[in-house]
Length: 212
Image (tube, rainbow, N blue to C red; front, top):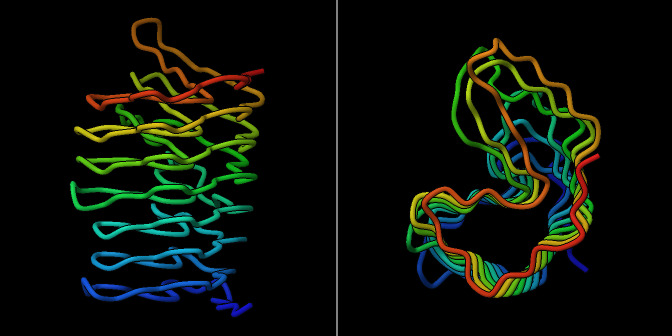
């Protein structure tokens, strides 16, 4: 096994060539460990990546991620989060046959500073990206707190902007304690499974997710 240890620094690797292939590597202790614009990442593991930046393990603007495992990634920013394990954006970004498990958001403060909107996702699938044949299971948000502005947040998968989630399973994800502050006119909400905002979800199992 070849391990690339980022020592909790940014960008272990950047990939930006259509013929590039990254295979059979373990990425650990990275902050936004891999930036992918073109090329293929296959049979890799991303573990123990800790950051407050979107796309903690992989920040994907194009290319293909296939047969990869994302586990024990950790969000360190108490503000809204996008892509605790991976953020995908753009019609040229595709992930398939991937496994996302045991990733943790210890505390999420929705609408930090009073901003409204949508956010979230162990996997954030945006702007035409495609997540296919993948399992998102046993991820956890310990505490979620909401301010008064209108918002909607997802723990497991946030899909938006024409994105596609197809033939996936989103199961046994957990949101723990929720605290809500409201001004009487606007409110916030969260889901432990999936938020779909102008996206398509096809043949996908959503089951056993728990909000306590």
